[in-house]
Image 1 (tube, rainbow over the protein chains, first blue to last red):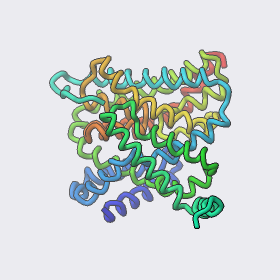
Image 2 (image 1 turned 90 degrees about the vertical axis):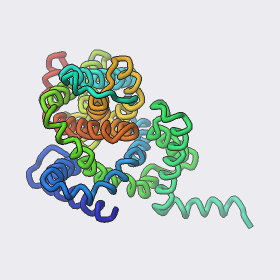
Image 3 (image 1 turned 180 degrees about the horizontal axis):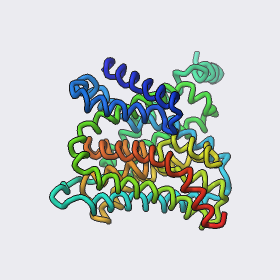
Image 4 (image 1 turned 180 degrees about the vertical axis):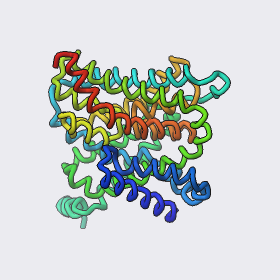
Length: 120
Length: 246
Protein backbone atom coordinates (compact mmCIF):
# COMPACT_ATOMS: atom_id res chain seq x y z
CA UNK A 1 0.00 0.00 0.00
CA UNK A 2 2.80 2.43 0.97
CA UNK A 3 4.90 1.48 -2.05
CA UNK A 4 1.88 1.98 -4.30
CA UNK A 5 1.20 5.41 -2.79
CA UNK A 6 4.86 6.33 -3.29
CA UNK A 7 4.67 5.32 -6.97
CA UNK A 8 1.46 7.33 -7.45
CA UNK A 9 3.02 10.40 -5.82
CA UNK A 10 6.16 10.07 -7.94
CA UNK A 11 4.04 10.02 -11.10
CA UNK A 12 2.01 12.98 -9.85
CA UNK A 13 5.29 14.90 -9.35
CA UNK A 14 6.43 13.91 -12.84
CA UNK A 15 3.09 15.11 -14.23
CA UNK A 16 3.27 18.42 -12.35
CA UNK A 17 6.86 18.90 -13.52
CA UNK A 18 6.00 18.20 -17.15
CA UNK A 19 3.02 20.59 -17.08
CA UNK A 20 5.14 23.29 -15.47
CA UNK A 21 8.06 22.88 -17.88
CA UNK A 22 6.02 22.83 -21.09
CA UNK A 23 3.09 25.01 -19.99
CA UNK A 24 0.52 22.37 -21.06
CA UNK A 25 -3.05 23.49 -20.20
CA UNK A 26 -3.78 20.24 -18.29
CA UNK A 27 -3.62 19.64 -14.50
CA UNK A 28 -0.54 17.82 -13.19
CA UNK A 29 -2.42 14.76 -11.88
CA UNK A 30 -4.06 14.17 -15.31
CA UNK A 31 -0.61 14.34 -16.95
CA UNK A 32 0.63 11.96 -14.22
CA UNK A 33 -2.21 9.55 -15.04
CA UNK A 34 -1.21 9.49 -18.73
CA UNK A 35 2.47 8.95 -17.76
CA UNK A 36 1.59 6.08 -15.41
CA UNK A 37 -0.60 4.55 -18.14
CA UNK A 38 2.36 4.63 -20.53
CA UNK A 39 4.63 3.13 -17.85
CA UNK A 40 2.13 0.33 -17.11
CA UNK A 41 1.87 -0.55 -20.81
CA UNK A 42 5.67 -0.50 -21.18
CA UNK A 43 6.40 -2.39 -17.92
CA UNK A 44 3.50 -4.76 -17.12
CA UNK A 45 5.28 -5.89 -13.94
CA UNK A 46 4.60 -2.46 -12.42
CA UNK A 47 0.96 -3.55 -12.23
CA UNK A 48 1.54 -5.80 -9.21
CA UNK A 49 3.22 -2.97 -7.33
CA UNK A 50 0.45 -0.40 -7.69
CA UNK A 51 -2.74 -2.36 -8.35
CA UNK A 52 -3.93 -3.09 -4.79
CA UNK A 53 -3.13 0.38 -3.48
CA UNK A 54 -4.63 2.15 -6.48
CA UNK A 55 -7.87 0.15 -6.26
CA UNK A 56 -8.15 0.86 -2.55
CA UNK A 57 -7.87 4.60 -3.25
CA UNK A 58 -10.35 4.47 -6.16
CA UNK A 59 -12.88 2.56 -4.04
CA UNK A 60 -13.18 5.69 -1.88
CA UNK A 61 -13.03 8.23 -4.70
CA UNK A 62 -16.41 9.66 -3.59
CA UNK A 63 -14.99 10.68 -0.20
CA UNK A 64 -12.33 12.82 -1.85
CA UNK A 65 -14.94 15.16 -3.38
CA UNK A 66 -16.58 16.05 -0.07
CA UNK A 67 -14.27 18.91 1.07
CA UNK A 68 -14.50 20.72 -2.31
CA UNK A 69 -18.23 20.06 -2.47
CA UNK A 70 -18.84 21.72 0.89
CA UNK A 71 -17.32 24.81 -0.74
CA UNK A 72 -20.60 25.01 -2.71
CA UNK A 73 -22.37 26.37 0.33
CA UNK A 74 -19.82 29.16 0.67
CA UNK A 75 -19.86 30.01 -3.04
CA UNK A 76 -23.63 29.57 -3.47
CA UNK A 77 -24.24 32.31 -0.92
CA UNK A 78 -22.34 34.72 -3.18
CA UNK A 79 -23.76 33.38 -6.49
CA UNK A 80 -25.43 35.40 -9.21
CA UNK A 81 -29.17 35.79 -9.68
CA UNK A 82 -29.64 33.63 -12.80
CA UNK A 83 -30.55 30.41 -11.00
CA UNK A 84 -33.12 29.30 -13.59
CA UNK A 85 -30.66 29.68 -16.48
CA UNK A 86 -27.95 27.91 -14.46
CA UNK A 87 -30.21 24.96 -13.57
CA UNK A 88 -31.50 24.62 -17.14
CA UNK A 89 -27.97 24.69 -18.55
CA UNK A 90 -26.56 22.16 -16.05
CA UNK A 91 -29.53 19.77 -16.33
CA UNK A 92 -30.03 20.05 -20.10
CA UNK A 93 -26.36 19.94 -21.00
CA UNK A 94 -25.56 17.00 -18.69
CA UNK A 95 -28.45 14.90 -20.03
CA UNK A 96 -27.48 15.71 -23.65
CA UNK A 97 -23.80 14.91 -23.02
CA UNK A 98 -24.57 11.58 -21.36
CA UNK A 99 -26.92 10.61 -24.19
CA UNK A 100 -24.72 11.72 -27.10
CA UNK A 101 -21.55 10.07 -25.73
CA UNK A 102 -23.24 6.74 -25.01
CA UNK A 103 -25.29 6.68 -28.25
CA UNK A 104 -22.26 7.48 -30.46
CA UNK A 105 -20.14 4.76 -28.83
CA UNK A 106 -23.03 2.28 -29.00
CA UNK A 107 -23.72 3.07 -32.68
CA UNK A 108 -20.06 2.66 -33.72
CA UNK A 109 -19.34 -0.51 -31.71
CA UNK A 110 -19.74 -3.74 -33.72
CA UNK A 111 -22.70 -5.76 -32.46
CA UNK A 112 -20.62 -8.80 -31.47
CA UNK A 113 -18.50 -6.67 -29.13
CA UNK A 114 -21.44 -5.18 -27.28
CA UNK A 115 -21.30 -6.95 -23.98
CA UNK A 116 -24.28 -7.22 -21.71
CA UNK A 117 -23.79 -4.74 -18.92
CA UNK A 118 -25.49 -3.85 -15.69
CA UNK A 119 -27.22 -0.91 -14.16
CA UNK A 120 -25.30 2.29 -13.75
CA UNK B 1 -18.21 18.89 36.45
CA UNK B 2 -19.58 19.25 32.97
CA UNK B 3 -20.98 22.64 32.12
CA UNK B 4 -21.94 24.36 28.91
CA UNK B 5 -19.20 26.95 29.10
CA UNK B 6 -16.55 24.27 29.23
CA UNK B 7 -18.15 22.52 26.28
CA UNK B 8 -17.92 25.78 24.30
CA UNK B 9 -14.28 26.16 25.27
CA UNK B 10 -13.61 22.60 24.23
CA UNK B 11 -15.32 23.20 20.86
CA UNK B 12 -13.28 26.36 20.27
CA UNK B 13 -10.11 24.43 21.15
CA UNK B 14 -11.01 21.49 18.90
CA UNK B 15 -12.12 23.53 15.90
CA UNK B 16 -8.79 25.39 15.95
CA UNK B 17 -6.95 22.17 15.06
CA UNK B 18 -7.18 20.29 11.75
CA UNK B 19 -8.46 17.22 13.63
CA UNK B 20 -12.08 18.34 13.69
CA UNK B 21 -12.45 19.04 9.96
CA UNK B 22 -10.97 15.66 9.15
CA UNK B 23 -13.18 13.87 11.67
CA UNK B 24 -16.37 15.57 10.45
CA UNK B 25 -15.54 14.65 6.83
CA UNK B 26 -14.87 10.98 7.54
CA UNK B 27 -17.87 10.55 9.86
CA UNK B 28 -20.22 12.22 7.37
CA UNK B 29 -18.91 9.99 4.58
CA UNK B 30 -19.20 6.78 6.61
CA UNK B 31 -22.79 7.74 7.47
CA UNK B 32 -23.51 8.59 3.79
CA UNK B 33 -22.15 5.16 2.76
CA UNK B 34 -24.47 3.53 5.30
CA UNK B 35 -27.48 5.43 3.92
CA UNK B 36 -26.41 4.52 0.35
CA UNK B 37 -26.24 0.81 1.30
CA UNK B 38 -29.58 1.01 3.13
CA UNK B 39 -31.16 2.45 -0.05
CA UNK B 40 -29.95 -0.56 -2.05
CA UNK B 41 -27.17 1.51 -3.72
CA UNK B 42 -29.77 3.58 -5.54
CA UNK B 43 -28.16 6.41 -7.55
CA UNK B 44 -30.66 8.77 -5.89
CA UNK B 45 -28.84 8.25 -2.56
CA UNK B 46 -25.55 9.59 -3.97
CA UNK B 47 -23.02 9.37 -1.11
CA UNK B 48 -21.10 12.49 -2.26
CA UNK B 49 -24.28 14.58 -2.13
CA UNK B 50 -25.36 13.18 1.25
CA UNK B 51 -21.93 13.69 2.83
CA UNK B 52 -21.68 17.27 1.48
CA UNK B 53 -25.15 18.09 2.82
CA UNK B 54 -24.29 16.63 6.24
CA UNK B 55 -20.99 18.49 6.58
CA UNK B 56 -22.67 21.73 5.45
CA UNK B 57 -25.36 21.26 8.09
CA UNK B 58 -22.75 20.70 10.80
CA UNK B 59 -20.85 23.82 9.71
CA UNK B 60 -24.03 25.92 9.58
CA UNK B 61 -25.20 24.65 12.98
CA UNK B 62 -21.84 25.16 14.70
CA UNK B 63 -20.86 28.41 13.00
CA UNK B 64 -17.54 26.92 11.90
CA UNK B 65 -16.11 28.72 8.86
CA UNK B 66 -15.32 26.85 5.64
CA UNK B 67 -11.69 27.97 5.86
CA UNK B 68 -11.36 26.46 9.33
CA UNK B 69 -13.10 23.25 8.25
CA UNK B 70 -10.87 22.98 5.17
CA UNK B 71 -7.72 23.23 7.33
CA UNK B 72 -8.52 19.65 8.35
CA UNK B 73 -10.38 18.44 5.28
CA UNK B 74 -7.50 19.41 3.00
CA UNK B 75 -5.77 16.14 3.90
CA UNK B 76 -8.63 14.27 2.24
CA UNK B 77 -8.79 16.80 -0.60
CA UNK B 78 -5.07 16.30 -1.23
CA UNK B 79 -5.59 12.62 -2.07
CA UNK B 80 -7.57 13.63 -5.19
CA UNK B 81 -4.19 14.08 -6.92
CA UNK B 82 -2.80 10.56 -6.36
CA UNK B 83 -6.31 9.13 -6.94
CA UNK B 84 -6.41 10.77 -10.37
CA UNK B 85 -3.00 9.22 -11.15
CA UNK B 86 -4.35 5.88 -9.90
CA UNK B 87 -7.04 5.93 -12.63
CA UNK B 88 -4.26 4.73 -14.98
CA UNK B 89 -4.33 1.29 -13.29
CA UNK B 90 -7.85 0.13 -14.30
CA UNK B 91 -7.32 1.92 -17.61
CA UNK B 92 -4.17 -0.09 -18.37
CA UNK B 93 -6.22 -3.28 -17.90
CA UNK B 94 -8.50 -2.12 -20.74
CA UNK B 95 -5.70 -1.23 -23.16
CA UNK B 96 -6.10 -4.28 -25.46
CA UNK B 97 -9.81 -3.48 -25.85
CA UNK B 98 -9.11 0.24 -26.24
CA UNK B 99 -6.75 -0.51 -29.14
CA UNK B 100 -9.45 -2.43 -30.99
CA UNK B 101 -12.09 0.21 -30.36
CA UNK B 102 -10.01 3.34 -30.80
CA UNK B 103 -12.12 4.88 -33.57
CA UNK B 104 -15.53 4.51 -31.85
CA UNK B 105 -14.06 5.76 -28.57
CA UNK B 106 -12.42 8.80 -30.19
CA UNK B 107 -15.67 9.71 -31.98
CA UNK B 108 -17.74 9.31 -28.80
CA UNK B 109 -15.27 11.37 -26.76
CA UNK B 110 -15.14 14.20 -29.29
CA UNK B 111 -18.92 14.39 -29.81
CA UNK B 112 -19.50 14.22 -26.04
CA UNK B 113 -17.00 16.98 -25.33
CA UNK B 114 -18.43 19.31 -28.01
CA UNK B 115 -22.00 18.59 -26.85
CA UNK B 116 -21.07 19.43 -23.24
CA UNK B 117 -19.56 22.81 -24.15
CA UNK B 118 -22.03 23.89 -26.86
CA UNK B 119 -25.21 22.84 -25.02
CA UNK B 120 -24.16 24.44 -21.72
CA UNK B 121 -23.33 27.80 -23.34
CA UNK B 122 -26.27 27.62 -25.76
CA UNK B 123 -28.92 26.84 -23.16
CA UNK B 124 -27.56 29.47 -20.76
CA UNK B 125 -27.64 32.22 -23.42
CA UNK B 126 -31.12 31.20 -24.62
CA UNK B 127 -32.32 31.42 -21.01
CA UNK B 128 -31.02 34.98 -20.78
CA UNK B 129 -27.79 34.41 -18.86
CA UNK B 130 -25.02 37.00 -19.05
CA UNK B 131 -22.00 36.22 -21.29
CA UNK B 132 -19.88 36.00 -18.13
CA UNK B 133 -22.15 33.29 -16.73
CA UNK B 134 -22.13 31.46 -20.08
CA UNK B 135 -18.33 31.52 -20.07
CA UNK B 136 -18.31 30.10 -16.53
CA UNK B 137 -20.65 27.29 -17.69
CA UNK B 138 -18.67 26.28 -20.82
CA UNK B 139 -16.16 23.93 -19.13
CA UNK B 140 -18.60 22.57 -16.51
CA UNK B 141 -18.19 18.89 -17.55
CA UNK B 142 -14.40 18.94 -17.18
CA UNK B 143 -12.67 17.98 -13.94
CA UNK B 144 -12.48 20.92 -11.44
CA UNK B 145 -8.85 22.12 -11.93
CA UNK B 146 -9.16 22.10 -15.74
CA UNK B 147 -12.61 23.72 -15.64
CA UNK B 148 -11.42 26.52 -13.36
CA UNK B 149 -8.35 27.24 -15.49
CA UNK B 150 -10.43 27.27 -18.70
CA UNK B 151 -13.09 29.50 -17.10
CA UNK B 152 -10.43 31.98 -16.03
CA UNK B 153 -8.94 31.98 -19.53
CA UNK B 154 -12.40 32.58 -21.08
CA UNK B 155 -13.24 35.45 -18.75
CA UNK B 156 -15.70 33.52 -16.58
CA UNK B 157 -15.79 33.31 -12.77
CA UNK B 158 -13.60 30.34 -11.68
CA UNK B 159 -15.25 30.06 -8.23
CA UNK B 160 -18.70 29.86 -9.85
CA UNK B 161 -17.36 27.30 -12.34
CA UNK B 162 -16.15 25.12 -9.44
CA UNK B 163 -19.70 25.07 -8.02
CA UNK B 164 -21.20 24.28 -11.44
CA UNK B 165 -18.70 21.44 -11.94
CA UNK B 166 -19.71 19.78 -8.65
CA UNK B 167 -23.44 20.21 -9.42
CA UNK B 168 -22.92 18.71 -12.88
CA UNK B 169 -21.02 15.75 -11.39
CA UNK B 170 -23.71 14.96 -8.84
CA UNK B 171 -26.59 15.45 -11.28
CA UNK B 172 -24.96 13.16 -13.88
CA UNK B 173 -24.18 10.44 -11.32
CA UNK B 174 -27.77 10.56 -10.02
CA UNK B 175 -29.55 10.48 -13.40
CA UNK B 176 -27.27 8.30 -15.59
CA UNK B 177 -28.93 4.98 -14.76
CA UNK B 178 -32.44 6.18 -15.60
CA UNK B 179 -31.33 7.87 -18.82
CA UNK B 180 -29.25 4.88 -19.99
CA UNK B 181 -32.11 2.47 -19.25
CA UNK B 182 -34.51 4.72 -21.19
CA UNK B 183 -32.09 4.80 -24.15
CA UNK B 184 -31.53 1.01 -23.90
CA UNK B 185 -27.77 1.37 -23.56
CA UNK B 186 -26.42 -1.68 -21.78
CA UNK B 187 -22.69 -1.96 -22.34
CA UNK B 188 -20.42 -1.04 -19.45
CA UNK B 189 -18.16 0.75 -21.94
CA UNK B 190 -20.87 3.15 -23.20
CA UNK B 191 -22.33 3.79 -19.73
CA UNK B 192 -18.90 4.31 -18.17
CA UNK B 193 -17.57 6.57 -20.90
CA UNK B 194 -20.72 8.72 -20.84
CA UNK B 195 -20.48 9.08 -17.04
CA UNK B 196 -16.85 10.16 -17.22
CA UNK B 197 -17.33 12.62 -20.09
CA UNK B 198 -20.52 14.23 -18.72
CA UNK B 199 -19.76 14.24 -15.00
CA UNK B 200 -15.97 13.84 -14.52
CA UNK B 201 -14.72 12.44 -11.18
CA UNK B 202 -18.07 12.20 -9.40
CA UNK B 203 -19.50 10.21 -12.32
CA UNK B 204 -16.33 8.10 -12.31
CA UNK B 205 -16.69 7.41 -8.58
CA UNK B 206 -20.25 6.26 -9.25
CA UNK B 207 -19.07 4.02 -12.14
CA UNK B 208 -16.42 2.39 -9.90
CA UNK B 209 -19.14 1.51 -7.42
CA UNK B 210 -20.86 -0.49 -10.18
CA UNK B 211 -17.84 -2.29 -11.70
CA UNK B 212 -14.09 -1.80 -12.25
CA UNK B 213 -14.64 -2.07 -16.01
CA UNK B 214 -17.25 0.70 -16.06
CA UNK B 215 -14.93 2.71 -13.81
CA UNK B 216 -12.03 2.28 -16.24
CA UNK B 217 -14.09 3.66 -19.13
CA UNK B 218 -15.34 6.50 -16.95
CA UNK B 219 -11.74 7.34 -15.96
CA UNK B 220 -10.81 7.38 -19.63
CA UNK B 221 -13.79 9.64 -20.42
CA UNK B 222 -12.95 12.01 -17.58
CA UNK B 223 -9.25 12.25 -18.44
CA UNK B 224 -9.74 12.69 -22.17
CA UNK B 225 -12.66 15.10 -21.77
CA UNK B 226 -10.47 17.23 -19.51
CA UNK B 227 -7.73 17.38 -22.14
CA UNK B 228 -10.22 18.01 -24.99
CA UNK B 229 -12.08 20.72 -23.04
CA UNK B 230 -8.78 22.51 -22.34
CA UNK B 231 -8.03 22.43 -26.07
CA UNK B 232 -11.51 23.10 -27.56
CA UNK B 233 -13.32 25.45 -25.14
CA UNK B 234 -10.97 28.44 -25.58
CA UNK B 235 -12.02 28.86 -29.23
CA UNK B 236 -15.42 27.12 -29.25
CA UNK B 237 -17.00 29.31 -26.54
CA UNK B 238 -16.09 32.74 -28.04
CA UNK B 239 -17.17 31.46 -31.47
CA UNK B 240 -20.53 30.33 -30.11
CA UNK B 241 -21.09 33.54 -28.16
CA UNK B 242 -20.29 35.50 -31.33
CA UNK B 243 -22.85 33.52 -33.32
CA UNK B 244 -25.49 34.09 -30.68
CA UNK B 245 -24.85 37.82 -30.78
CA UNK B 246 -23.33 38.10 -27.30
